[in-house]
Image (tube, rainbow, N blue to C red; front, side, top):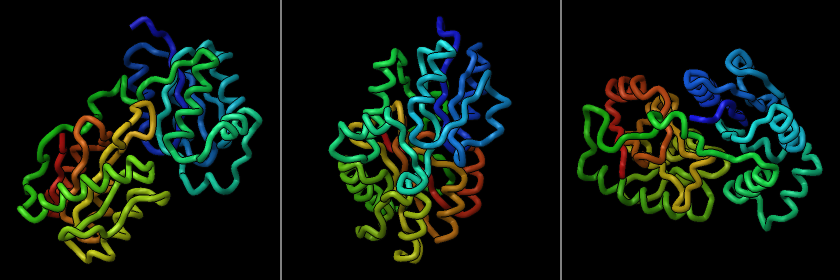
Length: 269
């Protein structure tokens, strides 16, 4: 690898820290742009330098990366989507990006942001390019396999998840007995599982899939032990994720808890 340094545009969760450790192990210096109220402050101990910004301060972000001679960057970790409607103070660069768009749905906004970075000579790489081992494997991961009814719901949920993904609405759907209990919107996967579980009562099937035109540079579907805890709290029975296009955190812990709770986890190719 000829790259010596990498930019990290960090959101919330553990992914920024995981990525930083992997980059350091490969001899890369990490220059992180962290978001106030979202990014774990502990990230500072894992990187060469950190610039704290608020959502919408795009010019500060670009200036920091260029000052540190960063030519490649990744966008890792989430931003609480509901915060996009309060407390955001977009700078002129951010306003310029938004002004070129018909809407501000996830894909369009992130692609426009990535395009702006690339105009500045900063290449946005796939968020998993240093950690491909985080991508979901194909097959059943748990002792319990889905039964015939659950498999039918998995197929049905998959088709619905791909439809809402194509519309850039969300990535998850909760189904039971061939009916949709909940569709992910701006509230996120865990809230969707709780909504669907409340309606389905129990034995619901959760399907999480990438968008048909998924850009692996950002907004890659992700699951973790919190997903299983949420499912357990509402009696959900199956989690189906897209193999090779879903990031999995704490996989061993996920599988252990799922086995304890009788939940089946399946990676679908």
